[in-house]
Length: 158
Ligand SMILES: NC(=O)c1ccc[n+]([C@@H]2O[C@H](COP(=O)([O-])OP(=O)(O)OC[C@H]3O[C@@H](n4cnc5c(N)ncnc54)[C@H](OP(=O)(O)O)[C@@H]3O)[C@@H](O)[C@H]2O)c1
Image 1: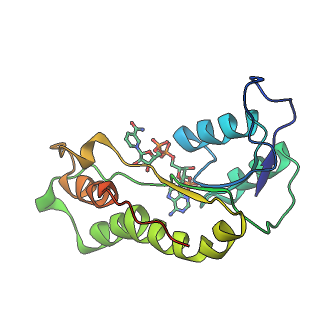
Image 2 (image 1 turned 90 degrees about the vertical axis):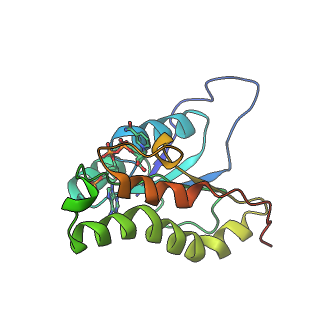
């Protein structure tokens, strides 16, 4: 789904016009705030979530183009938190957590690579958590999924 800024850029000093952003889980919470902020600076936004109605609302609020030929920035925001002690985790809980918080950003970034490359200066942002540095007792496995995102790399992909 695409959302385009309807107002001129909030601040005159810089803008994101002609930029295209893919934001996962942009229908509520932090992702929604990211969508609003980027759109406010003039970027065309593509976003989605599991809930079809929420995704459609995002579409109706904007001027969707339905496709994109390049992506200037990809924000891997969608994530879940399962509040359980490690000993209470089922195999399904662990699989859901890993697939949503770690595998999906990895595979989506791989898939987006040609579109990021086409922009000439593509960037990928991963939304982590302080739990990725110091695990919270409410869900150590969640900390694991975020810690994997924190590894610093200076590698530039061409
Ligand atoms: N809130 C915090 O205090 C906090 C702190 C540290 C880090 N974070 C991180 O920030 C990110 C956003 O957190 P939030 O609190 O804004 O979460 P949220 O309010 O629960 O929103 C999550 C968004 O992701 C979507 N989503 C979840 N699973 C998805 C899936 N499998 N495929 C597609 N979309 C999916 C949700 O929509 P649907 O349910 O419709 O799919 C929703 O739009 C997460 O990565 C989270 O770990 C949050």
